[in-house]
Image (tube, rainbow, N blue to C red; front, side, top):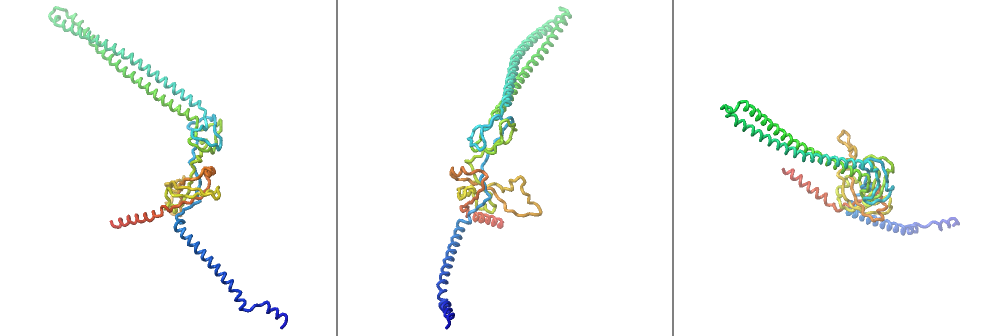
Length: 389
């Protein structure tokens, strides 16, 4: 045997030795694979059970933002801005003064209305004085009418007394004619006094109408004064609610029109989440269900929430130009419905939230898991009743 053959015998093992060396490795691999398979089976079973019990009831969306019912500050009247009491991003309380508009024009209108009230009151007083005077004139007219009637009755009596005497020749017919003429004049005077009395009585009614007109003018002037006082009060703009000033565009000396946006008040203590869920996610979503809120700006922080309400229509229906699908070509698109979710956070976390932040919302709809089955049963009963007819 050569030296090289001896070296080969030392380096190459027999088949039995190689088989015995591979057996332990094969068993270890099988054990590892078995453990991995068992763990995978347990994990899969746990996932399936969790999905069936909880997972399939969790509806989430990242189409959600923090929102707030912001108050737009705008004046009721136009004018030049005299004072601005707040700064950008300043916290304000309800009722705090924000802006003052130059009140001189509104005060002048109020003074003019007060002058009109005084004029109307003076006119009414003058008309009342004339009414009192007219009552005296009416009394005088009645007295004159009574005197005229008495004289007419006397003259008529004289004519009646002289007529038989004139017929018998005891008195001249000339005297009777004079008495008849006098009686006729007295009768005409009675009719004239009656007409004068009626005219004076109608003038009382006219003067009373003037009193009512003056009173009405006074009421109109008081209404104008009230409106002017409202305008005077509107020159000072106050905060309608507590919050933080944002989007401030007003400066001293600026001329503003009525309804011009000057600033906004953001109520940071009344924030909520507006989440736009797909219409296929809303079957089991109900007000009062718990929600989990993950804010992108707060990495790893989860906030609690609760479903408050759902919008009465999809977001597309409330757009400026709602879609009109009554056309020849139609592509079905899953719509989204805004859902309002309250935020249950600590003051420390709430201070870090501002409207417009992006969030991810997950709602647990398990509390309504039996609703669909109940609805199906009710609809089936309706169909059965229709088929039975």
